Image 1 (cartoon, rainbow, N blue to C red):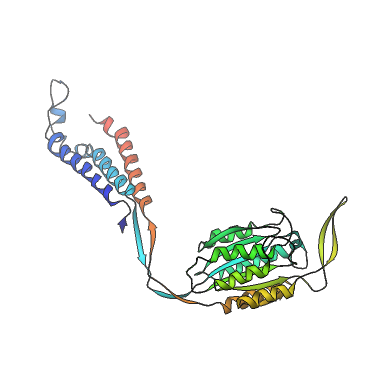
Image 2 (image 1 turned 180 degrees about the vertical axis):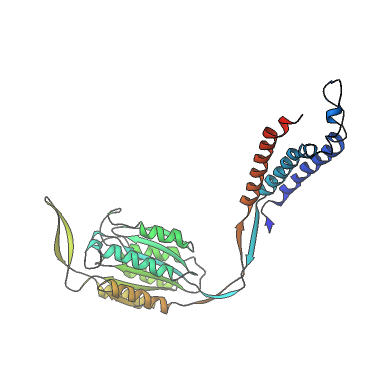
Length: 328
């Protein structure tokens, strides 16, 4: 066990001084504090049970003070983990969030299937730093590179369509993902770009973004999502939502070109199972051996000391109210 704020332990000198004062001043001062005709009833007070109990409140108060000082010094226990070999790389998931991702050729639709399977992928990469970029007519970073799996998964679940200008700016999405990785010192840097459409927006062409990724040594895996032929798509009508079949258009030539330029690979996902298999294949392909130094895992212990202090104060109050006040 160690303390986060060890200097606060100097405050323990206070209860020590209080004990010395109590022993050498209070206990030696046996003179009665009230004028009475006879002190006979109190002559045996020091040796009786009640005579001992009268010291309990001070003892309990002192113990409570010691426990409070220890608690605010923040005691923690730690266990060190040895060095281990781990598979860690930096990955950015670039996800298309245009309204076409609402098509229901996936279960329940493309966007939710992509999110659910991405969460599974994230859970399988405990040692990697992973970030999230979303794009439609424009792009932005949903989550920077992090190893905080809980935050990453929560931010992935919050992704939805309709929050930014509609369209499919593949170049902008890839460029934003590359910007998140270009300063990384990881030996392996990867972008997994998922889209269901044709580039029709943005200021940066996909080819230019791919060349920039290649310059920085960033590998790009591209995934085209969508059934072959047509896909059911929810369309808003005056009578409510109507499901209509729309043509699936994916620029597979462009996605293959991006992957080839950066040393990655293009995949086509036509349903949930296929998309899950693609992520599984990428998971197997991207393995970079690294070494993680030993590091401490801390457990906070202050609550136990605070609880002891509370119990002591409650006992002191009870003894004062129920015993001391009734002593002769």
